[in-house]
Length: 612
Image (cartoon, rainbow, N blue to C red; front, top):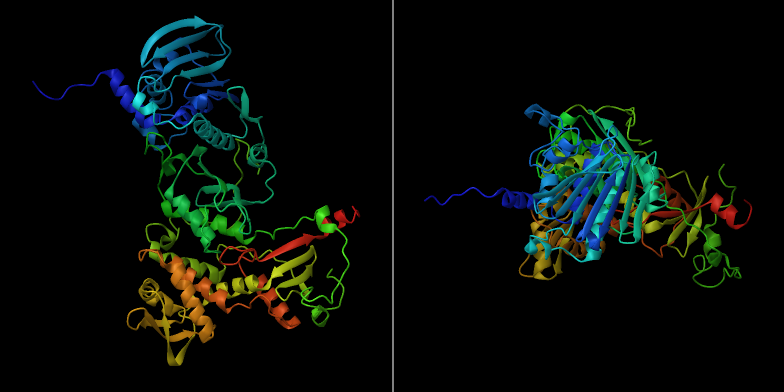
């Protein structure tokens, strides 16, 4: 007798369910996507015990007649596709015909549905994949699906579920994403007696963001179109000082996706301005022809493959670069606590630069998408990206070439917006650390070290596109004692360091020989920069992109070459820093992610003086 046997249908369904149904949130996603495909305008989701006890999804879609209701519970039965050619351009969320039978095979399942042209509905009950009852019932148009006791017949799977609170959080997360993808649909989510989320239909993505997250004026709007790919949405500003990690919601043709190409483009755009590690908050919608991507990659349909990967990468990267470069300066808001009247004492040491402020005072007067479901935003004006013109050196397939594209873009200004910093007139310094200036919008407070660091960093990156930085040979080489690990880190990056003007080599155990340093730095500053670099580059894999290593070295070099805090500046030097800052591509943060300036707007001042 042979050893190979055919698995029973119920066991095969349970195995298939493991690919589609990972947890209650997976059930919610599949059922809500079915409701969306059915044309629902209102979707109500209810969970008990995080969905482990019950998941209930109700919609007002087109519903099903009795024959379709029975057939929908059979594997590979679907209304979404008819032939193999349909897989080349899938327009719906579901198409495999696996979700309902998979869910029904691992739960006590009930389906109640009715079409608008019928007077009664159909109810089908399934226990562990076996139909237990089917009957005619009164029902409103649409569909209601109840999934009770998920994984009751798979105790090994059930015990791996998280706590009720954790599972509820996952359900809330996926519901939030679906609500963002479809602002024109009303969503309600309840957990037990508690309403977790309630969003009436909205007209735009911005309106839906407000419903879900409240006022998000801190987010930047982004829009880009090229090569048949349209991207729009909202992203975290460079100078945002909130968490370094935020929600990342990416939708392609309204489908929730996780894609390495897009994730790389997001990080690449932010890393152009700062070496600060962050996973920024983004809410991005991409639209492209259905035949430009393949969604038939994974059972959960969260992964896709692009016909032109480099094009998608460049549209996302350049779109984010445009928005980040045009990002405004954060505004300070005054509170009553900050307006407590205090005697002015300019003679007290440390106040306004220790009483020396008048010597530097400058007299003079102040200088005078919609995202409804349909249609999608119209094409945007601007130079198109040719099909396949996505820079290959900026894609994950060629990581070592990323620096060339990044530096070239920074040098030429390609893909970047002009700085949003307005012309400013410096008034003086505060504690020899902050430049106080005025523009046509109010008062600006600039951190002189951070601003100069931003200027020098971009200057260094621009010079690297033309070759190496200018270097000065030392008459007597500098010998630096340091831990062996630090010496090894710097020695391994000797080639990268040489591009910045450093000439380093090992000199025995625990000693580094420095024969040349950048013209920007003094010998003492170079030694401090190398020690900082050893720590900054430690653990950076040798296979890491050249761009990242050089950016870190350039950022540290710029930091040590920039003017320091507690350093008095002449009016000419302050003016020079402010003018150079306006010429940078990303004027709101330094390469390490710290804010360059803050502004108190004229409106904020007038409001607190009760003038408006």
